Image 1 (cartoon, one colour):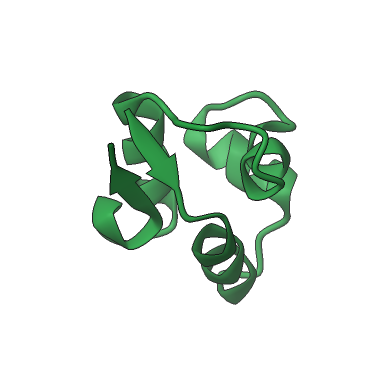
Image 2 (cartoon, one colour):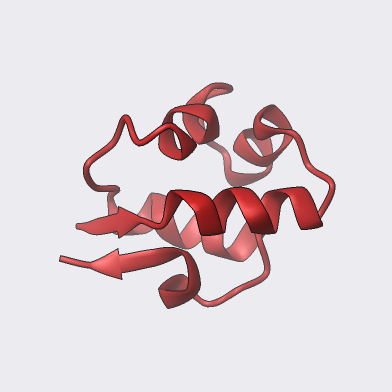
Length: 68
């Protein structure tokens, strides 16, 4: 499992001029997934979802997630 760096995800999302919903869709996640991640509602994320988020944000996985 990977722990999201909420503020880093938000920072990178805003730099790409994406809404939370747009990023969720780009990652293939439910519409409100990024909102919930940025709010800290998830203690950890499955690696496949974390990889999708990092890919959509065009960064390395370690830039936006910490390994447990």
